Length: 169
Image (cartoon, rainbow, N blue to C red):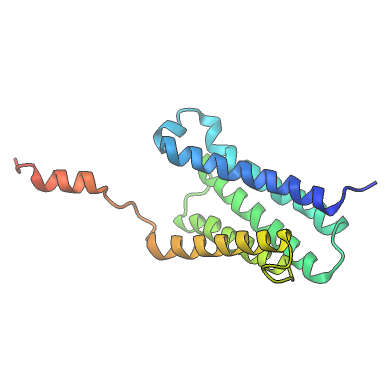
C-alpha cells in the first residue's frame, strides 16, 4: 500500500516549511545568538540533506513520467549537494569560498524543479498555482541573492555612519 501523491506532497511541503521557519528564526535572532547552541548550525543543512535522500524513493516509486523523474532526481541531487556542502562548511571541513555557491545553485535548481514538475498552467488548479508560485519565488530569490551579494560582508550602515562622525585619534 503506497500513499497517495497528495500525501507525499504534503510531507515534503511540511519539510520545506520547517526549513523556512528555521531560516527565518536564524534571521530574526541573528547569527551570533543562533550559534550559541552548536547543534543549531547543523539543523537546516541536515534537514535539507535528509529531504534530498527522501526524494529518491519518491522519484523511484511515485512518479509516472520521465519529466517528473528528471524533476525529482535533479531536486534530490540539488538538496543533497546543498545540504552536504553546508554541513561541511558548518563543521569546518570545507574551507573554499566556492562551496558557498552550493546553496544558491541548489535553490535555483529547486525552483526550476518546481516549475518543470507542474505541467499545467497557473490557474489550472490549486496545486498548479502553488507549484508555479513556489518555483518562481525560489528562482527569483536565487537571482536576487546572486545579484546583490558579492560574497563578502558589507559594513553595516550604523557602523559606517558612526566611523565617519567619530573624531580620528
